[in-house]
Amino acid sequence: MPPQKQDYLLRLIEELGQLVTEIVKLRQHGSYDSALHTVMQAQERLFARRAQEFMTRPIEEQLHLLVIGESAANAREKCLVYAALLTEAAHTYLAREQTALASGACQLALHVLLLTALRYPAADAAEDRTRIAVLLNLLPDDQLAAEVQGLLDQFQAAGQNP
Image 1: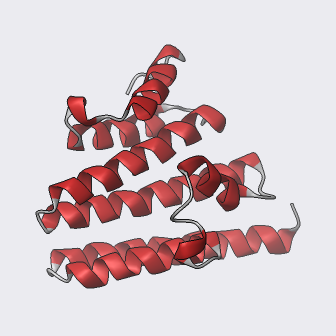
Image 2: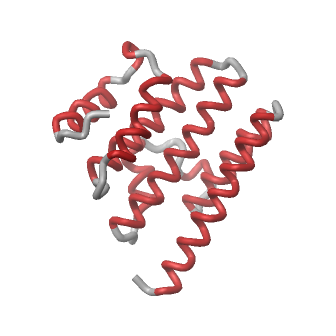
């Protein structure tokens, strides 16, 4: 990968990390609408597209748009950032007591994490297991979509139990 593309990705990841910190602060101060707006801005920055261009697509297509032309390592990193943003949205919806929206965002984040772990496995799967376990703790077992449950089963069969 050319050094300038790697530098760009590092700057992008750093910028998105700062936005996640801002989202947490906004949520902690009860500014839920601002937190969700910042989540949306961060997603648009990550995808380099307006939200309408990716949000209405199935998750597989979203991830494809996200990783076009990226190395496996960079693709993994971008997918993990996307999952983190979705997780922050879930926490914000929980803070607003909007459990259905929280569940949806959490389930989407889990879907992204499982696809990422299966497509771009980490050298040490402990980090993936931890992230997945956190999301599973937020979701009642009976609320897992069949597709997400299937991915979880594949993840566990690969010896990566969360």
